[in-house]
Image (cartoon, rainbow, N blue to C red; front, side, top):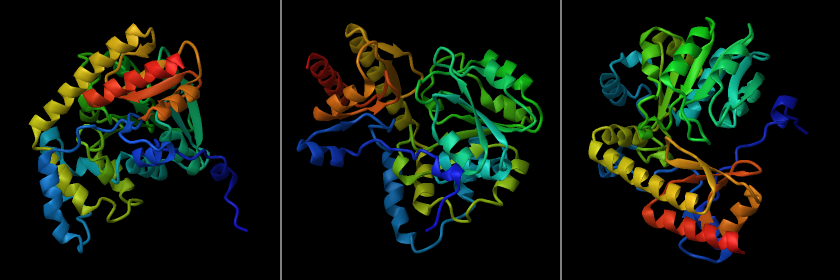
Length: 359
């Protein structure tokens, strides 16, 4: 019998949102909608689809491990050097690379709760210690996080915007926080949803990069670009940090099809504008309907909404919505997270929610 060590055995595996096909088979229904995984309901750019088809003829070849064309295009857009960008099999892989590179057994990583659960899973898998700081008014308590740094702290994770609450930390808050971070601590700012942000108070993380701070900015093609199924994300940081991370990165970690689709997506500004517009329209619709139903929600800067129930149980509501063909994400005893979908998907959710509440 092979036994995993204690720090592995106690990890709670990530449970993805239920697939639409599985729900329809279980319930014997059709036309189910999935509003659980913060996916782009519109899908990828037509330019990305065209690039995907063209890339299929070369899949007998290993991918370009350096992501040369994509790296250089992104570097030009961001005003950085190509050596300052690292790509991963989704930004999740870059989180793992950072932890494996800079955090050893017994070292500490600071993160908020609730936030993206993958941070704590990867730190625990590496034998590190998670230092959990509760959110304050559904936002990262950066002052408390800075106060928890010790000589053992190697990484601080900040999701901005935060998942699952959809909230941001402001320029002034981030400026004050960065002034308190001691040398030798890598600040990982996860900006998976940054393209959706409309607030003028949103912190410019690239400023800290330009100042030479030890910062790793994470972004992805999974969300607004609609390439979640291809798994491609990137990080922006010092070339010296990337040099170390490349020592543990697999040589062909980003497939060639994902690279081609991501490259094509960057040139379709019209598609991104359409995605943002539909998201904003859906957000306003859901705000109005949730308010009319006297349900509390957290104003969001993302493509999802965090709803806090006054009465009832989140799990029960989740299961009730399943019976009506709607998949959402239960986040706790009293919280659910709803992805903003297409107009007809949002309407189906509201109608299902009314039915469940009346049952």
